Length: 212
Image (cartoon, rainbow, N blue to C red; front, side):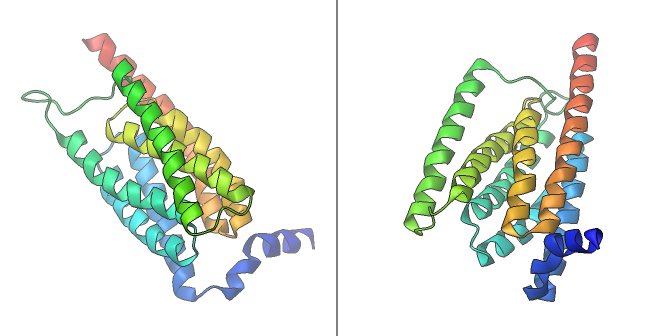
């Protein structure tokens, strides 16, 4: 009985969704998991899988009028193209851009991206007259965190994982409240993968420093 109630709480909203939308959300989640997994593995496939996932989510989030989330995924799409270029760019005759730590000048850029995103998402919500409850505030915060995290990942900076972990944790209950249970489950998985991703990148960075 209790399990049935929990199941209904998590998935009852899907009874009113089109089958195609449910299938698309599941597909986007699976490609999203693949993208984060490849990111953890420091594998270039993080970007093509991410492009597929974000493309689907842009459509779904626009349809469900989740504007902040839609902006996040549109930004991911653009930054995935940028990151794909950065990760394959040769820094010398043999090596591509390595994992590294953020510089002081990049810290300033992080602050600018974070602050600018807060203003941008606020203005979007105001324009569409959707600044109506606490979800808009949280959505604005997570959007800023994700924007910074994606930029740092594209630059192959280890600090990207800090922003992913914080934003992923916040997104689990947020998406559950929004009625996108599969996406909430995705972010729970993302949190776990992000923790392991940070540990893997930290080990990679330590090994690189020792071999210099």
